[in-house]
Image (cartoon, rainbow, N blue to C red; front, side, top):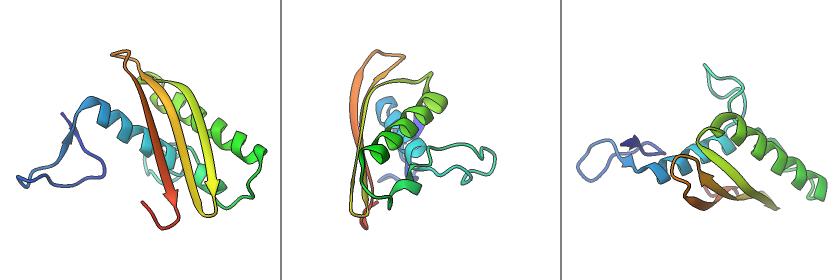
Amino acid sequence: MNVDYPFRFDGRDRTATADDPDHIRDLIEQVIFTQPGERVNRPDFGSGILQLLFSPASPEVAATTEFMVVGALQKWLGDVITVERVSTEAEEATLRVSLDYTITRTGERASATFTRGGGGP
């Protein structure tokens, strides 16, 4: 089993765990929303998209964001998932990233949406 993200304790006061699909979703979220430089031993880990959060909404910013997400996921999780589709949406101070992907080991297709900003986690 894998440690769940964010770290927490389960109902038995033990470290919460996650099954493989949930763990992979957690890994994707960490890659997308980690800023390069945040991780001490991996200074280039992450996508860097949060720097675009307050950029003016435009097709160019959307394309740049999607490019950054795909690049980071291929770099850090390329052996775990295959990214099929990425779309981003910036609305005021909220960034929403949606993606479709295939889990390499099982061939299972999955979709996930991640949101940051606007006071939400």
